[in-house]
Amino acid sequence: MSKSALTYVAVAAIAVALTIGVVSWVWQAAGRNDASRNRTGLTPQLMRLKSKSMRTMRDGLATSEYLLLEEGVAQLREVNTAAGWYLSDERYGPAGDAFREALERFDDDVERRDLASAKRSFDALTQRCLACHRGTSDVRLDADLAAPLANATVPGATGAPE
Image 1 (spheres, one colour):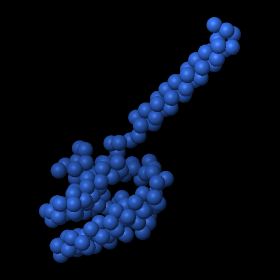
Image 2 (cartoon, rainbow, N blue to C red; image 1 turned 180 degrees about the vertical axis):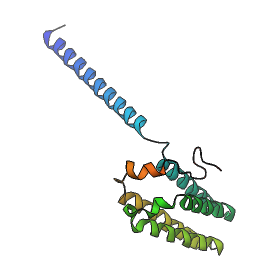
Image 3 (tube, helix red, strand yellow; image 1 turned 180 degrees about the horizontal axis):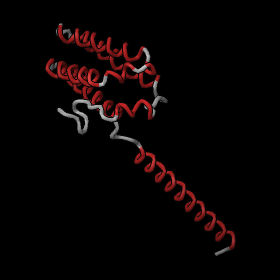
Image 4 (cartoon, rainbow, N blue to C red; image 1 turned 90 degrees about the vertical axis):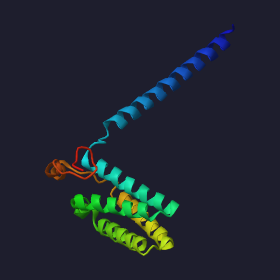
């Protein structure tokens, strides 16, 4: 094998090794980041319960099942009532009020059995969720706020009374 061929093979081997090393480092860093996320705190549990309620309502709209729609509204209202501090905190500003108003409009449409309006109200409710998340994406509960809530319970949350 010629000297230039050996050089080419050596450079290619180094490039492959570097690529594998970088990919491995990124993979490990992503794993550490994912493992470090608090998935059991009150806020993540609330968000999962809210998402579950929204999925129930979405399924009700898709199948025109008013029982599912009513169940989803009741679940979402229960989560918000049990954790009233969450959307009433000044950091969330008017987003909490807008969310509650959109939920009431959706509930009114469901009670009137107006599926077309309920679909529009659900879209508006979803937009309120997205707007709040966009506006608070950098907001995290600090220790001062979390400490008094350490013993708070939310129906359906892990360890909470049903």
